[in-house]
Image (cartoon, rainbow, N blue to C red; front, side, top):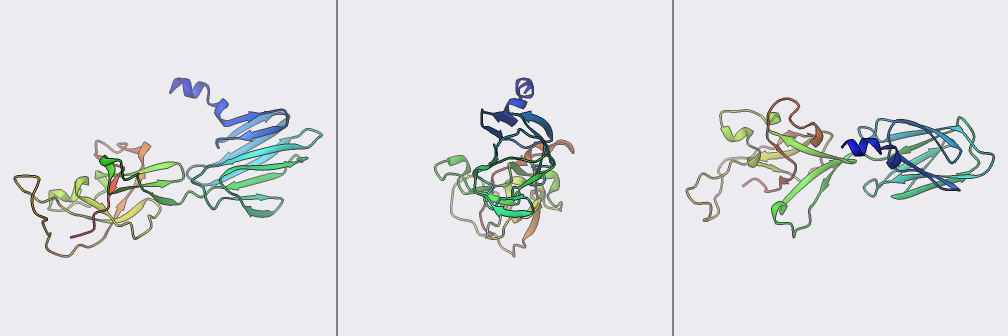
Length: 224
């Protein structure tokens, strides 16, 4: 981590003789290739990235902005006009004017992430990502009740027919069958299964509220 922080600036911006490239998005003030830029953003909590030109060169210059592969539906606003941009590099080549602002809007809405079925450990599971953030369910957020399984993440199954929302998914708690041997006939759980909202938090914030269990990959088993 110390080495990463010491070299962080080399990951954010690069320059060539004719181009200035923004690769990662964070608050910064930089001059690269004679082009002065002020970047302000709350990314990844918010997808808007405002790039203000603070200094220029007396010639045409290319400014490239990276659009991650996950950011389908991104847009770029410049000179009051908004246009869709595709994942990859968005290139803007012209003579820039000090004070002009380019705003890149990267979608950060939650989405399901499905693993390759050849990965045994997570087969039949999904994860939730919001922009670059990996989300997780934390046991402290599950509803409490008389049944000890109500706070057991191993009993959690999510409903992938409903799109994930900001900070939550819909699912069920399906208590595992108490049997003396882990193999046998399929067991049907009696009684209705009511959907419930399961809060999610970014993985990097796990355990800030005390010791808890956590799960990123969530089973998709429907209620029996």
